[in-house]
Length: 166
Image 1: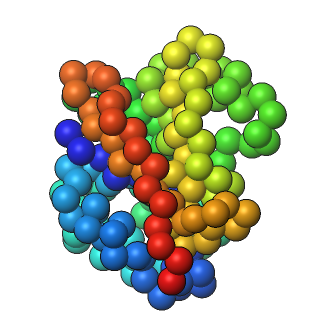
Image 2: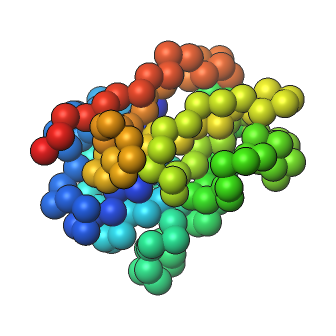
């Protein structure tokens, strides 16, 4: 099962559209995960139409319309892998321990908010992934998104994709 993970798209404030390579990855994926800060409801509509399956949450920059359509936390099991998605996880310091306590029943936590790619493992085995942002790189050298594969309850082939500058 092929996954695309993205967050902090901030359309149309940070960009008019998502970068072409991300759209191509979305079109090819079995499941797309968006960890919040869509900003524009139109992106949710287009991404829903283009995705085989979309799992998304709202972020701190998402207004009432998006909050009415999306949960704060999404939980799903994909091929035996237990996943939670949330926008904010709090400060960087202590993140792994805090998230392991908040999400003791999942294998993978996908989050956003910082625009900074993150890939760590908490005590007890919880994997934490933040795909960064495909439209607002902030202090990072590139805008980014992640791809991964799920097979029989395991997450494999996690890859960070840097995007070309517009």
